[in-house]
Image 1 (cartoon, rainbow, N blue to C red):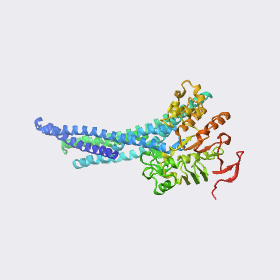
Image 2: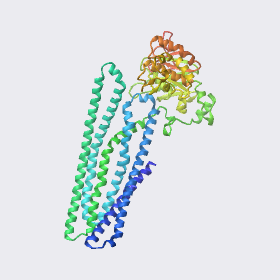
Image 3: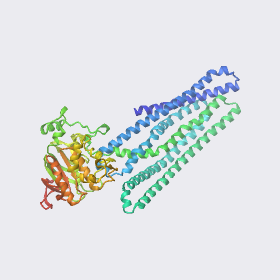
Image 4: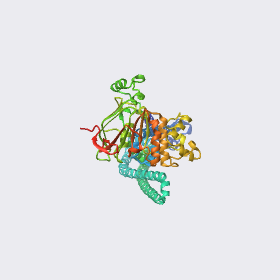
Amino acid sequence: MTRHYLAAAVAVGVASTVCLVVQAILLGVVVQRAFLGHRPVGRLVPLLAGLAGAFLTRAVLSWLGELAAHRTSASVTSALRRQLLTRAVALGPSWLAGERTGELTSVATQGVEALDVYFARYLPTAVVAAIAPPIVLAWVLWSDWRSFLILAVTVSVIPLFMVLLGLEARRRAERQWDRLSGLAAAFYDLLQGLPTLRAFGRAHAGRRTLEKAAEDFRVTTMSTLRIAFLSSLALEVLAAVGTALVALFLGLRLLDGTLHLAVALAVLVLAPEVYLPLRRAASEFHASTAGQAAAERILEVLDEPGPVSAVQTDGGTSAAVPTATSTAAAASGAGSGAGGKPDLAALARSTIRLSDLEVRYAARGIPVLDGLNLEVAFGEHVAVTGESGSGKSTLLAVLLGLVAPAGGKLTVGGVELGDLPLRDWRQQIAWVPQRPYLVRGTIADNLRLGDARASEKTLARAVEQSGLSGALERLPHGLESPVGEGGLTLSAGERQRIAIARAMLRDAPVVLLDEPTAHLDTGRELSLAETLGPWLESRTVLVAAHRLGLVGRVDRALALVGGRLVGVDEAGVAVPEAIGARP
């Protein structure tokens, strides 16, 4: 559909150029017959009607061109924004954690909007600029070859100016976009951290950082505008000189009587129109450079490899169709659902197996997980400890499908995770991240993200089991107490308890806990470990924590050392025997 709109915009531009040539010819003939031929107005009616028709046709074509251009822009920008947001969601928290939120927000809003000029203005204008001048020049060559030579020589210089100035404008526009992205990121970081900065008396330092970013953006913007104005001036001067030369030689030949007035008027009317499409294209190019710079960043996000490529579909939805092998394995291991697809609820209640798993990050020279092997039966509780950065959160991210392993396999009930619909698999998991995120609304709104249909009774039970009831008693409105974006109005411990209560509402057979008691004191940690016991029964539980004493009773305790799992003794000390290490 977008190609059709773009083709329509170009076709309208070409048709408008043809109408312009007809209009110039008719105008020259009317003037010559009226003033030199002394024809009465009545005999010029057909020509005047044709001239009026040409004017009217050009007006209609102009309106249609604007309509097609804006339809093209609306179609492309809406689809691009949808793909960008869908891709960011598909890449997941692991990817988002390494990106600047302010920059991504700027790309999704201002960046996509900046492409409006590129698709609605520059692209159709650039194509018309490559077609329209040759059409006009062809008629001028047929009518007056001397004027054609002047126009052809001057017009041929314009692309050279456009290339030289365009390259510099593009370079400065990319720098301008980088400054804008930095400014957006600095502003967002300052806004998010303002309460902390004010608490430590560092708000002025944050303001100075923002002022410096704003000043860098201002300087870069003015530098970009300077190039744009210089380019416009050069093209205007060149067009003026070319038109003036054509007018001069036309006048001299009219005085000599070697040229008809009708031809001279038509050529004179068309001379500026030879330069006009090129001038418009240059002008729109400068206006669209910000969009082109943003497009590069947008394409980087869209080309970012996803965590599990087998489940990515058009539109970003996770609806992969299992292979025949995986379907058969699912049928034999845990049963199949309708249509021969694996029954995810049954698979989630079977064995989870990681074989020779390897995960690498580009920023690290060594693998985060290297030859990791782990088998967790349904209902088993496993604790994984290790130092910060040892790969505990990465292991949970692999199970969630947020990080794609570089090697090895992850199977659920004998079916590889890559052959499962990722969205449906995540429905079988209750996940408590190390840094839970809360949306703006009420506490009840954030809890219902776990289950939108949860009843008041179910909410109350989750609040009680998670230990959140004590915090609610201190809040004036209880569950209806307002929560700021990111949970700014709550303490770290309260946010963590809300995340745990939210996970309880999912009633999922697999539970992943990433430092669930990181923001609680020792007494509350032990209390929470006891209250979580009933909820964790009959579920597969994998807990990542620094200390074993804070995760309650587990069936097995393992430690991540050098990217591999090793056993842990009763004192919580890693023993040298590796768990399924790569030979």
